[in-house]
Length: 140
Image (cartoon, rainbow, N blue to C red; front, top):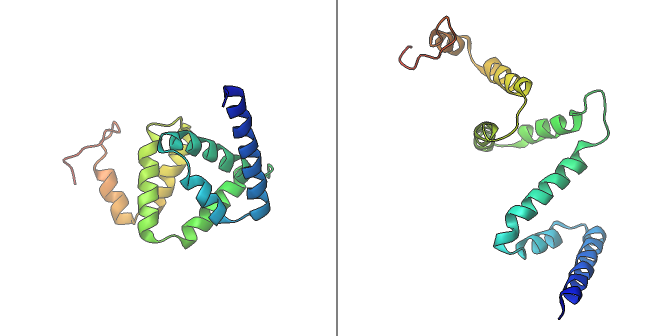
């Protein structure tokens, strides 16, 4: 098989798969396709799928362009177990340092965390911050 024939066969397979996915619309079909991806191609496919998910989940701009994203996140949080929430939030917070992340987003996250603390925990936290804003590991 020549390189051109291989490319054409791959394009035909891709078109057939896309057509089948549209017609079938089943998770089972998608699972079979995903399970057939060679291990070395998974990172690239995952990146492609993430881009697609961002594209299809964004929706048309509303008053708040993030409304669908935020409502989807709220829905997930409502049905997630506490273990899932802890695991995903922790992983997300660790991911922030490796991602391009707006300072305003970091502040919103901090405020969300702050608002969930009891007054006693807020006071204990503030007792560990000196007047210059440095965190004191040995205090409180």
